[in-house]
Image 1 (cartoon, rainbow, N blue to C red):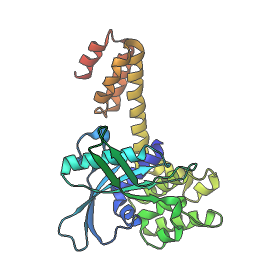
Image 2 (spheres, rainbow, N blue to C red):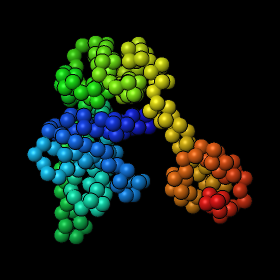
Image 3 (cartoon, rainbow, N blue to C red):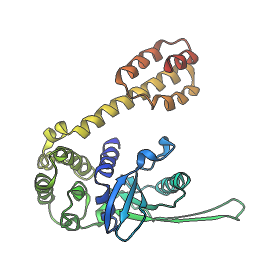
Image 4 (cartoon, rainbow, N blue to C red):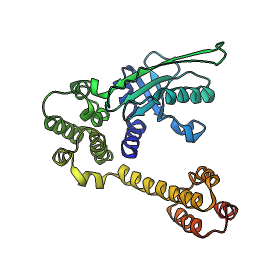
Length: 283
């Protein structure tokens, strides 16, 4: 689900305030994403936003966890996110889970109860859950917030989807800044792909041309290629030297240079042993 996950995270970074408003947070005066400032990057929340609300003297922290579908593991993710932020900031954040599309009968309850094996410690967590398909499309369209438009195809509306897609296109054309126009069209198509697969619908949002011209999707494709190369390196090493090579994956995550990853991929296929690859990795 990389396309949906990464498109959603782009929206958090660029239009996180819009998502907070969709979750019922009002009076936002200033905001900024803080994800890069949280420790333990392998376990980061999908989004961490600092927002100063009207009447507050200090900003609030909001953790956003995005779920493509309702899943039982969401509760564990929320608990992990809250714990990480608390350990880093010594503040309990407001937690919001955004579920994009229904699947089966599974529901995200927004609550978790845990007890220690000895029964002496009880941990109770409750948080806000926003299910896109339960929000009327008109609610987002009437908000006059272009950052909400990419979510509209996943909301509730009666009748065929074509008029909704046309409204989304018109709003992005009219309200998006020039530097975000193509990105918003492309991200809207990506998210709409969770619900629809008709080529004609996506053409209303610019079709393939919008996807090609979107800088954010070009960067996402480059990152997917890097991720594939990292995974191939680990797979080579595991096949040759055993499961202990899996630990190399952590070190590879810090390498973003495509040429360097290609060199390491070639070396993984010919190195004599795992220590020699580790030596090359830090060279």
